[in-house]
Image (cartoon, rainbow, N blue to C red; front, side):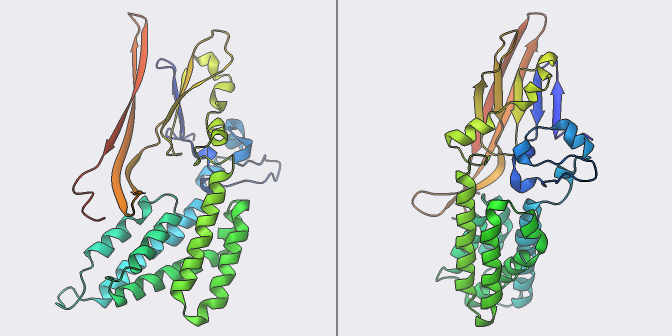
Length: 318
């Protein structure tokens, strides 16, 4: 500790990089003050000394985001593919073609927010062309994955406070309606709850995933420069994790009156987005920051290059 990917600086390049995870409530564990140690949550902001005293527990211990990734998506994907393979023999000429549904399952972790993955799979099983047995397997496994996830006490304990009521409501809805075998209705209800929670997360000013003015103001906070880092000559704060490609200037009081820049890489290797006229589009997003420091000529430059790519291969499945 500290891990290099979490925060790193190069005085010669005047560059300071942070991971950005410390801004994200869902992917940090809130720690309560106890046993003489300080507490921390995302509202407390950048606090290196506090993290050191906590041995970086907010970022190394399990958090709500882990329960979503491992408890719902990964579990659901693995169980669904296993059940599909068991139900349909590859040598059976009457078995349905599983190429499409397997690819969709493999791609579910590319959707953001995560509720979009639930919406995507339910949209697929709702198609009239989807085999009835395939539909049943997928929806039953999704129901079980969501039910188990919601029944974990840690899911509610680690969830942001704004989401606990909705998740509790979904938990009891699945529990009391399980005997009615209404998987489609039950899943649509949970899907609606998740979408509402994502909407609430978007409108909260402290959210890093919203691009409204209040959120960008929060995102452009430069605490890294405020903790005596100006003395090191840093002028660029680079960050990731938030997936909001951004470059902006920051007004920071400095005795040297230098200019300071915030660069968010906001990149996805692959991402699935909704099309305006319905359907989905796959694309890759990358961003590179180049710093030119020619000391002999006393010249210092930087530039950002964005790379957005798409292809016939990525469009094979709509």
